[in-house]
Length: 241
Image 1 (cartoon, rainbow, N blue to C red):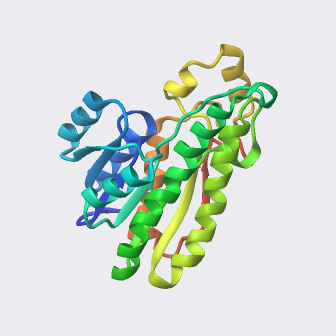
Image 2 (cartoon, rainbow, N blue to C red):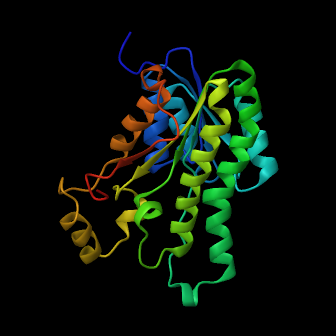
């Protein structure tokens, strides 16, 4: 058996059609898990990934409670839930619209509530399960122009720590991975000076790659992490220390 093997486990990854979610789904499949690729948009990408890794793609808008519940039900008997779905609507608070606030909170934070609520009873019943929620360094330290995003990602941390306390007695674990600045479509649009400032403050001197996050998630989902719950693992090149 390889380290952090997920042989025989069933996993659902939300927001998995591209970027970090795609890398997580592929890594869990490499570890032996049977993976459901959850996605809202990017049907072509999601189906291509599912075909590539031997997974199954299911479309759902996890910011909607009914859709999130349907996704969990269609995913079947889950051992692993990874909540990665998220977006940004950046802007200064003084000019932020109600819609930009609500959209980010509903997509990034409410979706975690909806999917975890749907999966917690089955996991508690079988006394086994691992939930990993993807937050961000912004949820720990904040960032200019991202009050909505920072609130959603900080909320994920508080939510997950509370969830870990509720589910621990049933051997269901809940942890957070908080990426630093990772090379994805979200960071590709940043101005060069902003990227340079990030790199200057990152001891390892590089942006993260989606695979860096995927490896951390795989570990937390595995039996090797069976005594870890309620933890926030920063995968950020040292930026947040």
